[in-house]
Length: 243
Image 1 (cartoon, rainbow, N blue to C red):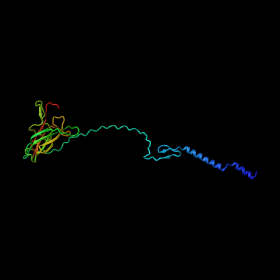
Image 2: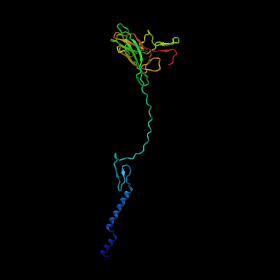
Image 3: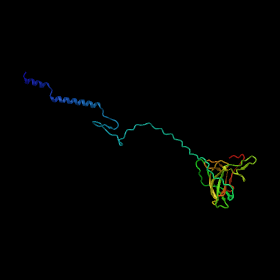
Image 4: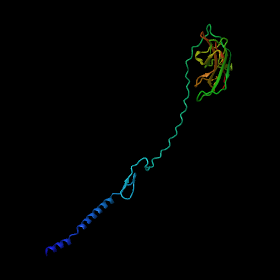
């Protein structure tokens, strides 16, 4: 076999170079296709499916996120409203008792006691009423009228007497039983005050659930001393009476 024949045989037995390249290219494409098939496109929050590769969105205020139902909160039990604080009676400091002395004013005259109908409010739980005391002072210059509540009933009714007045002429009122309701210049002639009214043999109670008031008395006072007390209103009770 000559050299030319051997060359032709060799060429016939070897695949063309173009065919080999095509085979290699097809193998690479097949390998890439297999890799792509094993990695699924991403799905879920912030992702969108499209033809070809998937693209991710950055969640923002304008990107609605799916809401998962959470546990339903049970309604809060309604709390009972706390009662309003009740006022408490606190005794106030009282002025020194003005005693009868030389130069002290005369006892007030024409003393009267009036029940008023104007609107009155002392706070929660208290039924309020206005009262007014009037007087005439013979020499009002430099004189002040003090109006006192008397918180002790000095006389108790008995079966034989039947009734008793809490104050009588000639009684000495204990200083601890005198509570100042207010003062006014003697020339003014009147003073109004409030009491809490309710079930009592007295006129009512001192505000803020204070003690019962069994009488109201007035006294004229000046720099020298004080007059005797004049009765404005005195209450009483009867033996065996029921409110």
